[in-house]
Amino acid sequence: MPTAEEAPDTEPDPVEKRITVEGTEEFITDLGHEFVNPSREDRTAFEEAGFVGAISDTRFVPEEPGAPHTREAPHISSFVAQFESDEGAQTGLDLVHADSLRRCPETCATQISEFDVGDIPDAHGVRRYATAEDIAEIGEEGEPYDSYEVQFADGPFAYRVSLFGPPGEVSQDEAEEIARKLYERVKGAPAPGAGSVSSTTTKHPSTGS
Image (cartoon, rainbow, N blue to C red):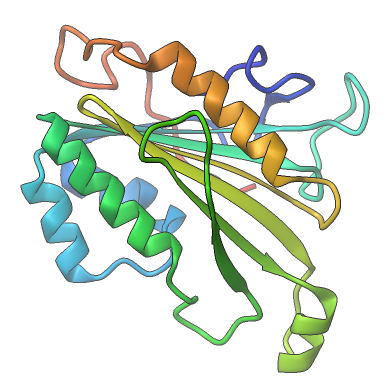
């Protein structure tokens, strides 16, 4: 997961706390809400790829050092999934990427585009955003937002790092820099001896941010 060293001026989110899962059923129950619109086929493919476990974590950028958490602050949402093999992780990455390019299951103002990611082999970049004009055009409630997501695989792990917040307060360069620093730290790292990403973490209930 990105740390304060990789994401300076951030703090652990006190609401959207770390979640650790093992096995497909826990994954669907505890982390399914983090994906746009996964299909039943996606879930089957995830399991058949040799999914072992996953961790999701969130940090936020306080308005000033020591300031309290707010929903409106920029956030970094990160996710790593472990598979039984490198090939399984690549399949997992492909599924995560395909999901990130999907429209919302309901009518929404979100626009989607892709961007190139430098310095991380075979990484994907996806921007999802909605302007005030987009929201007004469809006549729904909601706040404008911008998000930049970087996805990559390394060994048996598939990673996703998303930086999101109000328009003008987050950028592609920031998202790429955080992901690049994370990649430099984890590349080539062996899987935990217990064979699970959760061997040193504790599962917490997701409460929503």
